[in-house]
Image (tube, rainbow over all chains, first blue to last red; front, top):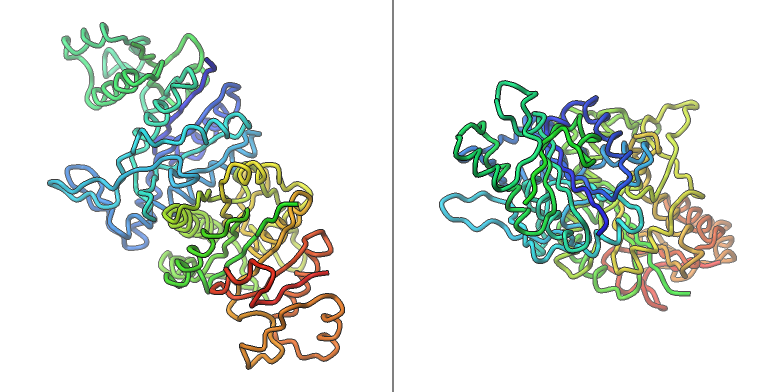
Length: 263
Length: 263
């Protein structure tokens, strides 16, 4: 099968103009088929503050009320997404900016209220992702760039976790492509020693993961990323790569500077 | 040739929730191929005021400085566009929200500085419009919905007049479709008597236009609309319709309640 990269960048890339530009240059130069998913960044909080929209949190998770939904719709879906698209176009990458509502590519459901009402937050309906539309874009050399927004098919946009959008798209496209799902984050990869940025574990398979868990040496915050990674692999994604945005080009070949996760 | 409607709505439709919803219902029910272009509406000014971004004007034309560009990118390209897309999706219309930067469909040039520097305002490069991309969407039953934004192919979004986007798309697609370009505005059509909303002139061709000009009875603001209409017809658009958003359904057949303009 043909190769496809599904690449996710977060606030640490979006918030820094130079980092973003050099990442987008590397992204543009990739010759393989590719999809970009971006998070929000601090700009939404900054604009929200100016508009008097207070971010509300519950156990560290943002609650999306009406005003916050408008805020993320305009900042993620408009400002951040279209600026990235315009920059990619200038780099000869024929990008198209999308939310999950566009062409109904990512249907979702408003998260049910249990203990907490998260508001306008979307849980993706994975089986309904319209990968045929994405294939149409990719076959026509159009590069999808997703903002972290979906819709409920009842007229509402839903705020949706960018990591989950990336993994859901990767899973949906695994029937048609050999997908490498790449999560860009602030470190070079999964580290043996959290204080040593050069101690990247270059390959993790299930056996290695079991060992790492037993050793108890994995640093804070990396466990959910690894769980997600193996979750995606369970659902058909060929490889997951966790690495730094600056190393994108090195992380798209057979030898990687980040951590390559396989079955 | 197959029929195609290119339909433009402005602030008077966007700013009123009920008017917008009933317009979108009618738009969804059209069985012919169709494209929607929307303007901005008062919401941009309102959010701009909250953010302390003052609208600057020169001879009644808004000047787009850096802050205003960010504002219109997020409000037109994000908030307004994606809300329309989500609503259309709920009405079984498979909409895709776009700016001219997306898939490089509408390349433009920053307006040259002569007497006035309009800032980040785009003049469309008509010959470079990628109608083949629009045809791909239409052939796949995907309905393009354009925000009034283009790009300069050098990494910048450009604020662009929605009427001009609509007429430029109509012209570009006239090689492939029998295009009816529909401008929705606050009146029922071009009126014989500006004080009588029921005095719609149902058909205007060049001969009739010459008569109307000679009579000097045309009301303020309608002249540029008619000039634009005949301009589009000169460039290959089959018909231009000027009418009210509430009458959309009546304005898509052979008999219309608005004003149908033909060669």
